[in-house]
Image 1 (cartoon, rainbow, N blue to C red):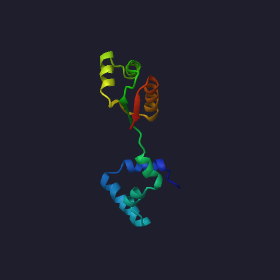
Image 2: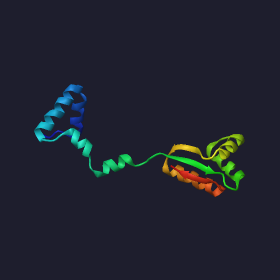
Image 3: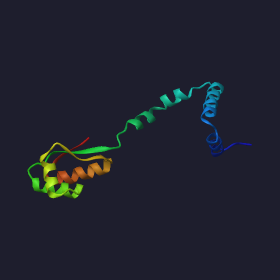
Image 4: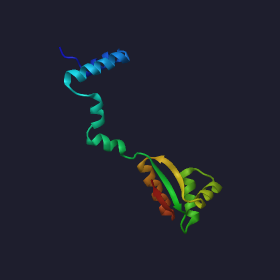
Length: 122
């Protein structure tokens, strides 16, 4: 009779923390491995995936020559009022949006650049 992965997980869920620790120690001894070493080494892809940036900041570095168009683009992108968008455009460099997805950051950058602004994504 074979035990499925789900059945094992259910059994582990019913165990106390100390029982799980003892089980891990027994597995390390039986198979001659270390759970800590497996987590640290984890393979090349795991380390690269952990370091891959997932959140981006869109920074307005300059409103450029067409300040009015940039203010309009800022208002549309952020929902700010006219005064706040004007202040933002004059306060560069300034973060327009922070911790957004790469797609959203690229779209916002394209919109602001089309209006005449200079923008960086960090």
